[in-house]
Image (cartoon, rainbow, N blue to C red; front, side, top):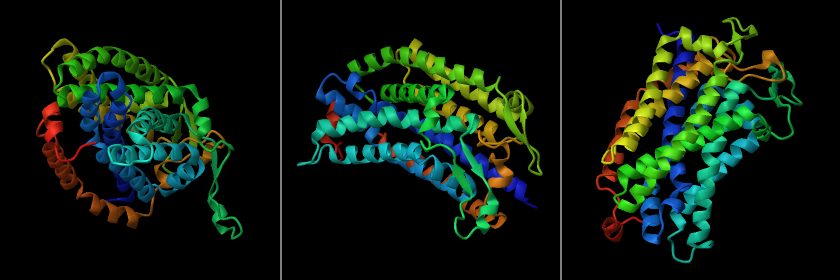
Length: 381
């Protein structure tokens, strides 16, 4: 028999997996931040923009699905974070909307901003999107300034369950240096994945040569910030919750979670190894072009494992810095059993959706990006 507890853990796994897929697909944003420096002439820049432009829908759809899954399975988190830290989430959403508009309108005749103006917006999305998403995810560990009082539902004059403590409404997360560290780690990871994708997808010797040179420095920057955050994570305390709802602070909580969940630790270590293998093989073997698939798979595993550390094993996945007992965890923020059961039936369609995405991806990437392909292609950015 499927229990309510199983459904809670199952849906946190789905959320974590979607988060891992989203971070992998941020290579589109990483490419947006790099195209100007990798492409020295207009033809090369069009090749790079078309390489990532044919994938931006996957990233945007995954972002929306990630938010929608949170809304349906953990509505209290959705109302607390999206309703309280709205400036942070709005900036993320606006940057992705600007990306969509820029891709679709930059080559249209008579567009308002001109090609250069829309490309500036693409670069802005390339910097803002990954960094701010990393900052937002970091608050799953570092916490946020909010309080929760479900008794307020009985107050007909002000039935607000969650209240945000800061007038900055999410932007205060930028004042925490460890949030910034993870934001920079995600930003540089997106650039690393973009370089690996360009090496795999674009057939232009000059672009590939520059991408391989850039990869070394971007990878070093990523490892510096990522390892700094992981080092902080395994030494910091966390908020533990008993099944009946009592919350307390536990030293080395995330290290304990890692050691006491071999499945999650194995996923995390395998993910890190795959990311490093994709980078190192690409740097050492000049003809190796499949690094994106090794590092991409490793990214999904690593991010999924990190999010599982935040929510599984009796952990508050959204700690409150204002009130310990307002912190959100699986037991106090989940949707009803009926909702989770219905959603679980729908989730059985996920493998078919992933298979369709794989099919579409293969169809789009059937031919690599070349100058000749751009001249004869039907849909160009």
